[in-house]
Image (cartoon, rainbow, N blue to C red; front, side, top):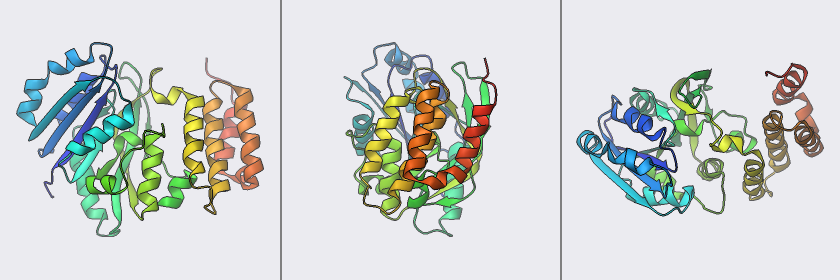
Length: 298
């Protein structure tokens, strides 16, 4: 297996409870050739203090280590700043409240090298994910597809691509212009840019990253997420798949709203059907109806 340098980036903001677990999971990787870049984006809690405790371990373990702290500029600005420093062939961005399994990097790079023989346009690799709560307790496992995907699958959002599991070619990130601070859903934005340029993804089946679900992370901010998705999709309004893509995203949002607002959820289903009546026969609709009929968990 290749031992190419990989740049691991941790953007941190107010994660004093979790950032050490994230750092430890990278220290414990069985892949050796790692540079670690941590940027604290103006945390107002004790995140910086916690990180400083691990500076000696990081300086000893990694072939290159960078830590910066400054005033808050937002996630996209932080990621672009980190991208300027990255020297690795590969780049892995992980939120400061998520955790890598010990063989995550080695297994994904090995799989990348194997799959690029089949798909020369491969630019990123994903995997399944283990969902955990704020205490680290396992909630459920979500497995990847074991398939390649491209622009169509990303645009229609038919492929499960867990953001914390992504390892991408650094040069491809730079070629597509990096992250745009005008868009708050940075992962969807960058996936569309990468695949619109011809790039392909592969998703491993095994869960290799633990993704933390709690009230402070992005997954709980439904209205903002939906606006962010619309802003990105609207950039591709001339694409022949646009109305179908919009309908698919409306169904995804309807599922999200089922947890918090039945009215908003049903309105999204109505709008999805109006844009593309074929969503009525989609698996997303089947799952939606099942959840609608099942009693809510207390």
